Length: 374
Image 1 (tube, helix red, strand yellow):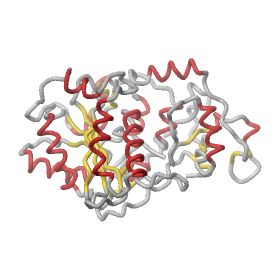
Image 2 (cartoon, one colour):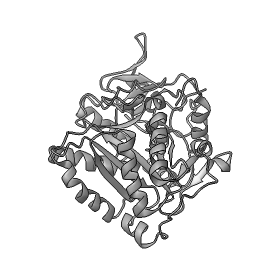
Image 3 (cartoon, one colour):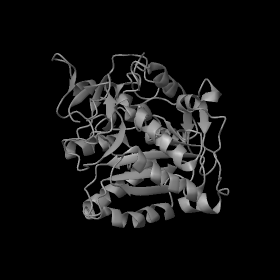
Image 4 (tube, helix red, strand yellow):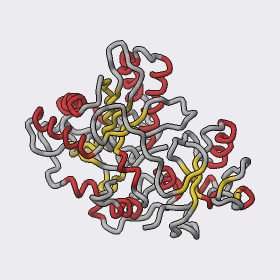
C-alpha cells in the first residue's frame, strides 16, 4: 500500500517510493528558512515531521551517492500560494481525513498493530518513523515520542510505539500538510463533533522534572468541541493513576460519549477496568484511537507551550503553578473557535449527563472512524 506523498494533487501522489526529508532541527538558522518558505505561521516541527522530495527544486537535490540526499543549502520552495494555503486551512476542519484515515486502518493488522501525531535530524525515508524510545516506566508496551537531539523539550507525549509502524501513515505532519483531504466514501465512518463534552481526548506527558510533591507526569483531558482542558499532575502513569483523575472529571462534567487516547492498547484496557470498578459501569469509556492528537492540533500546541513554559520557569514546582496556567488557557479566546472554552462549555453547553451514553458506538466503529472537529 502506498505512502502518503507530495503536495496538493501532485503527479507523484500515487508513488510508493517517494523520498522524505526530515527538518534540520540541528540548525536553527536553516530551520528558520524552511519554515519561512512553508508559509505556515505558528507551527513548529518535531522529530517525525518531514517533507517529501517534491517540495524541493532539483538543484537542491544530490543524487550522486547511494541514496538521494539534500545539499547543504537546500530549502523547500515548491509550496502553494498563501491564498491556496488559507483556503486549505479553512477547509480542513470541515472535511474528514476520509481516504487517508481509511488507508491507515486497512494497513494495520493484528500481526503488525498500529498510531495520529509527532516528530531527528538528517534525512529519512517514508518507510516509517524512527523507533520510539522505550519509556522508563515499567508498564509493558508503553513508549514515549522521541524529541530532536537539540530540542529543548525533555518530556514526551506517551504513545503506543506500534502507531509508528504503519507504512501507509508514516508521518503525521506530512499527511496533514501535503495530502489533499477527500470526502469519505463511507459516511458511517465519519464522526462529527457537534456538541460540548461529547468526545474527549486523553494524553499523558512526561517524564517531566520531578517536583517537590513527587509529580513527574501530566494527564490532560481535552473537550474537542469547546477546547476545555483539564490537567492533573501525577506521580506515575500507571492505569490506576490515570483512571482516578478521569473519575473526578466525569463526576464534575458528566459522561462524555467516549474518551479517545493513543496510550498503548493494554494500558487503555487496564484504565477501562479501573473506571468500570470505580464508576460501576460496563461501558469501555476510553477508546484507543490514533487520531487523538491530530484531531485538534491547535489545542495540542497550546498545551505543549504551556507545559514547556512551566518546566522552564518552575522546574521544581510546576505542579503548583499548573492550575493557574490551565485556568488562563480555558478563559482566553481560542485561536480556532474565536471563543473562550469556558463560554463554550459552561455557558452554552447542555447539562452534565450523569449516566453512560453512546451505547450505539462500539469500540471497533470508533477506531475505524475519522473525527471531524470544528
